[in-house]
Length: 531
Image 1 (tube, rainbow, N blue to C red):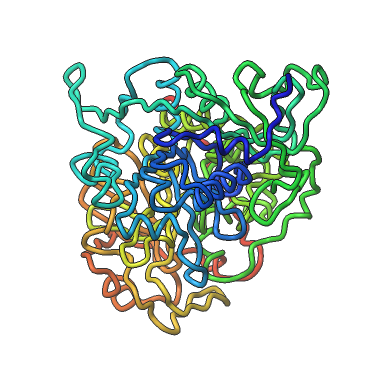
Image 2: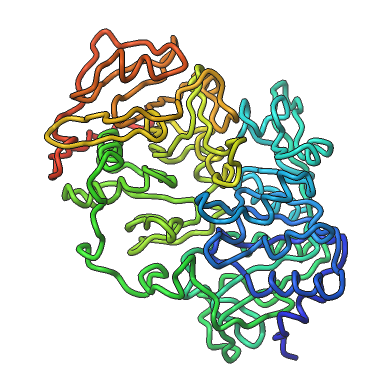
């Protein structure tokens, strides 16, 4: 019997009060046609009602794939637990789900993506839940916000601190979905799923297992259906015994603004001159300086924002391939992409399932994390997840908390102030107009990385800006380098709300960083990571 049904029929399988797990990362892998059908059914019938959604990364974006916004209607969506939420520029309307969050119309939680995947695996295995130290000292910690994004969520905690074997841990009870909605490229007639055109595997099989093992159903959205037996067994990523229904959408996008790019799925390998260098400017200066913290042979995690430009810096300097990049959506190696396609990589060496990638990150198996910051406070703590004045301009924590929890080396990149008019060139930096908002603040609005916990764990932390480099030391934030053309007192110390220390051997940043030409980057020799 065929498992293929319409999106409208799939929507009728979702019952009021269901817990629905959705596999997606922004537009990447988003089963948007099914989510749209659920929202359309609610508009017609007032059903289903009071859904809880589990979104380990995020579902939908602000550029054409609505994802969770299809469900963001009072009465339809009651509770949502997500690693990230749709975000974008202030020139676009606030996503509906953010409106529900700020107006307290939905219980909304921001749970680190890796922990949400762990919760699925524990639900599948009938284990009680996740014991972890990921998130200690951050907004994830119940001593702070406990992942709650609004008052409605704070009234029903999802995490608590427990003592186990004489130590404190965070405990997240497992949550079993009744419905898992996942996405692939191809289904055969039996329901075996292949991911040939996908930019990531994400966590579809873990979400399917969580639903199946708890008596639920699994609905897969695909581009096409083929004859049984025509998919190679090694190419089947979710087997037929885990898939109940298949919905065909031949027009599903690969990711935001990208119907299909064969280099993202690994079908073709692009020549290296296909990748444009990062345009010249202060942002490139920051990425260049961050690149100087790398060593030959490093495995490096890469985050969204300025840090995403670092692979282009290495390419321009003739060092592509000297560092292996690993991003949370699952790509390893290759060239991580920018902008709408962030989360994908061209020419990847491998694409692994996101839950496995997060296990790698949570355990600190990599060498360095290159990430961004919105705010840095007096403890060296970083906020990258929430600004109260414009919450929907940030996506939430995503995998940031999982990645930074046990990373041995972290480089945070960002502008020293927000909105400054800057000019880089001729070997120096000119600050033509100072920024309107200070980013080194007394107290961060939300703690996504805890500087206090980082020091306790012996993590090496550096903050790279266009005008200086700062280290987190035992006695505080210490300016180690200063850009040529910048005045230490006027442009750095006076522009921070907190007291910054100055290294006794304060050095000038390499003037070559501020010249629009390859600057002769030399990677450090790799340290013995087993010391």
